[in-house]
Length: 155
Image (cartoon, rainbow, N blue to C red):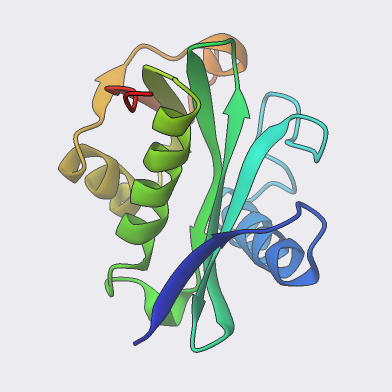
C-alpha cells in the first residue's frame, strides 16, 4: 500500500464520491435518508478537505470545519470498506490533527453515531475523550461526541 493523504477541493469528484458513499452507508445503517441534525458541510465552511489515495485510488476522506479561532470539528471521516483496518483512517485523522495544529487550533471535536463502534474505537484509541453532546447534536439520541486537546505547532 502506497498511501498519500492530500488536501483536495471540496467539489473534487473523487472526494465527492467518497462523501456520497459515506452518506449512503450511514443512511443504510440508521434506516433514514439523513441522520445529521446540523447543517451539512459545504465548500464555504470547510477549512480543509483531505482525501487518502492508495496508488492513485481514493480510499478515504475527512474534513475540518472551524468552530471559532481555536477550535474545529472533524467532518465526513470515511474509509471505503475494503480498506478498513489498514491504517487509512489513522492516517487521515493524523493529517487532520496536523492541519488543525497548523491553524493554531487547540481542540477538535466530532460526532459519530451510536451504531458505529469501529469509529468509536478509532477515536478512543487515538486519544479522543467522550464528551456530552454539543451544538446541533445536544438533543440527538443517536449521537456520540468526542474531543481531543491539541498542542498547536510553534511558529
